[in-house]
Amino acid sequence: MSRLAALNASWLRLLAWAERRLPALTRLRAKEPLPIRLDRRRIYVVPTWFGLVFAAMLLIMSIGALNYYNNPALLLTAVLGSTSVLSMLIAFRALDGLSLERVQSGTCHAGDPLPLELVFAAGSRLRNGLRVEIGDVAAVFAALPDEPLRATLALPTQRRGLLAVPRICLWTRWPYGLFRAWSWLNPQIEALVYPRPEDTAVPLPQSGREAQRSVAQPLGEEFGALREYRARDPLRAIAWKASARHDRLLVREPEQLTGEDYVLDFDALSALDLEARIARLTRWVLMAEERRTPYTLLLPGQRLGPDLGSAHRQRCLRALALL
Image 1 (cartoon, rainbow, N blue to C red):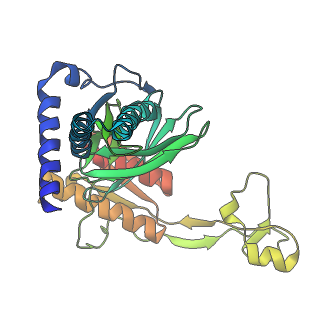
Image 2: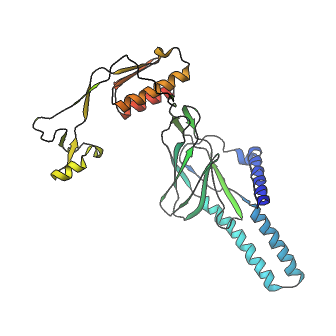
Image 3: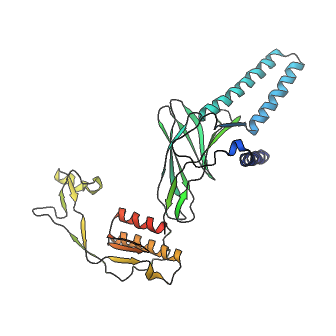
């Protein structure tokens, strides 16, 4: 088993060398806009080690059948040979016609895995045993006819900023593992990686004081911090238990924050280097959000806030990531 694994690793290294050296396999290195459709000019098929051993076995069987004039053995060799050739066509057709429609990236901080979702259009053909790889990250999936195909991977990240999605290898050994069909996709997509927050939770700056909470109470409201549901209210604001008790939809009244906001000033951290400043500001942004305290982020040439909420947090983290 270890010898077979070593042969397989050598074969993969040989393919990687050929892919780097041969112009026919390297012409698709340039970034491509979506959607990316696979056709016969982009799909490559080679026998696997198992396929080569199987071919050698068929050759020995055919020589033995011809030498001993054994027609049943010769017929069996022909059937197995035709089946193996047919499997090459099946492997090719598993990739032919696939189209990469969308690449959706999630959010993460530097050092955490970045969730990446690939959405393919499979067409009217059943496709089994498909694998997608980005570097050392891989996923296995199958596609039903006329249904979108989704594959989710977690890309490793090391630093903040824009991360260009690397080349994607889509391949299969379906159905018998005799042939490997693959193709490269290089979408023109960039994902944003937020800065990694400082490990030590340094207290927020004393440029402002924590806002005091007050709850807006509409006149005539008998349920304290609850009010009647309105058409534009988000579903997450509905108080389901209270609504069940009173047989009508009730919504939690959002808290209103009063008082001074925190000022997170980039220039005030002059004793730290650039990355240390960004890490501390990232930690402060997250801490201010946890405390539900409005805050202002001051960066060179930018002033964000005062504000609060997920949209403001994303704007601040994006500005820090691109600084």
